Length: 135
Image 1 (cartoon, one colour):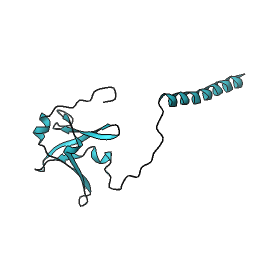
Image 2 (tube, rainbow, N blue to C red; image 1 turned 90 degrees about the horizontal axis):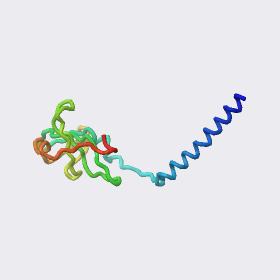
Image 3 (cartoon, rainbow, N blue to C red; image 1 turned 90 degrees about the vertical axis):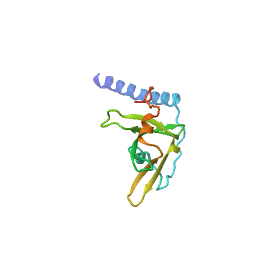
Image 4 (spheres, rainbow, N blue to C red; image 1 turned 180 degrees about the vertical axis):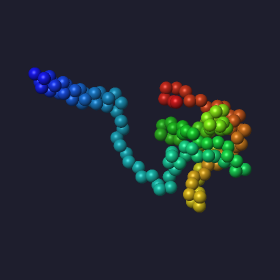
């Protein structure tokens, strides 16, 4: 009796798995997979997030904290400006065209440049994370 109840419960559990998977696929179908071949010198998100930005006077004016993506394209950088240990940090969103990112082969590291002072960035409208998909 125990064996038949256990068998019935196991069969019922496995029967619901394909149904749940089918319902999930029908509700949100994924596009077919397309593979890509990034160049060896491509910039990856890990190269950008945490990158310090320097201005023309070689002053550290901020750090890239996040990326703004929309429809699969980079639409902006979220920069943190000022603050110490997370206190008093001001976040701003800037266009990707405002930031130059280059790899320095001699130093073997990525470098970021922006044509702004820390005071200009602090005076810019603050970006705040909001909405259900944000932090």
